[in-house]
Image 1 (cartoon, rainbow, N blue to C red):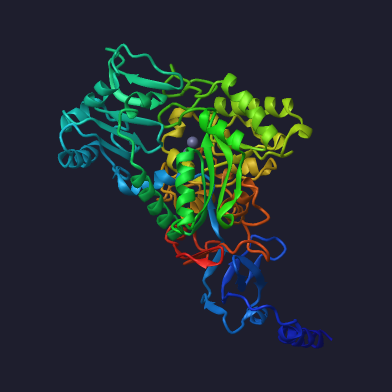
Image 2 (cartoon, helix red, strand yellow):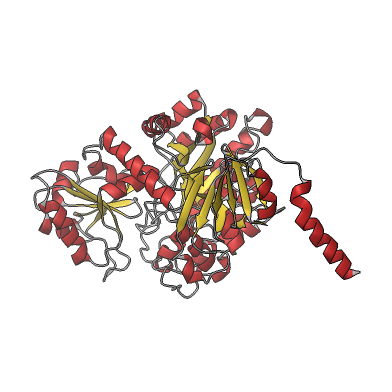
Length: 559
Ligand SMILES: [Zn+2]
Ligand SMILES: [Zn+2]
């Protein structure tokens, strides 16, 4: 009986294609793929058919045949792994392009090499012209301390120098630059920023945190339109080569928006961008009055979000903490936004259906922003909101007091997190925070268990901005050499299925796009990332060696 049943079902399986009505031929059919769909109803497949910019079939090689007509291009994937087109939920797009163009100080492991690299640039620069760069981080220097103005003065006594730390929340300036910025012993710290000073003399040491960077940075000639356009084109190329099909760009201005629109119009920008503009302030006001841009340029461009920055970063001790830093007992960091500016904007955003996302690193900043969101949500009931569930986001949700974690699900706030921050910060977070506060730090699994989704991003150019690093960091919770310190809460790592969702369906949901993107399903946009290895099965360390072999956006093979 059993064998008869098997024989019959085998027969049925073989005959199935011819029983199905012939379908409209597809433009492209991908066959022999190792497909992970992120669709719970049909998790695995071999073949995908695409017509126009949409997926018209997902299933077996045999059943895909009905979509192969005369003009159909058939692509044999030879068993390669296919996942839904990956998204980076926090990716400073223009910054990524500028990193490719400017003095890049990433990966330098000591002060001498740092100074040598800067000197090389100073020597090639005309007298009195600015030397700017980005990407240094002192974590592995011995000792791990910030460079000073006096270090830089030795290699650049005349040219003003301004070098941004990798996290973008601090920069070191030499004496010539501080002079142009008018930064002296007498200068007061601005709101939301700090001038680091010599403990004995009170003299500024050259490090400027967060809003204090503005003293100097406002004197640096702004990049030209042509330079920004070049940065966008470089960032587009780099991103799609890494397998990204959308990036969510947290912050910026209408200047960026206009350039994106121009380049989409000219067909030079292929990547999908989910854009935000900064607020409170004039950019946010404009978005609130003009209204959102949704699904423009073939679903490639959305602008419906205001980005708020509520504190600084942990590495530079600007993150706002409930209790002082363990390694600097006279500092608890600082907030960078005031309630009187924020709350009216939040209420208006609810009335007008505008999403808000807020950078919050420290446990105080996270509690503050949850409180502000809660006040606005209570003040504007669902009946008065344009969108009842506004899907507001908390960018980073990095150090959260455990009692605040359940509030995210309760308020409907989405923690948008960066796995790679945890594997970079593990080298200094314990000394900044002490062991106790690590309990609610980078607590991905606690968040997921509390009933929220966790979109994953890299915060590039703060981190490299490579989806395979993010995927590895989320599942391993170890640095790229396989190291993780004592007490680094390995229970907070995620499964591979969860990590894949962090880079696909969860960012889609956080962008109101779960019905059109984020999984490989009939009717959705044909965004696919094809990888050199099966990241759902290979040993952890091999994830870092995996690369993208093909990127498909809206049915078009863009890489
Ligand atoms: Zn941030
Ligand atoms: Zn950021």
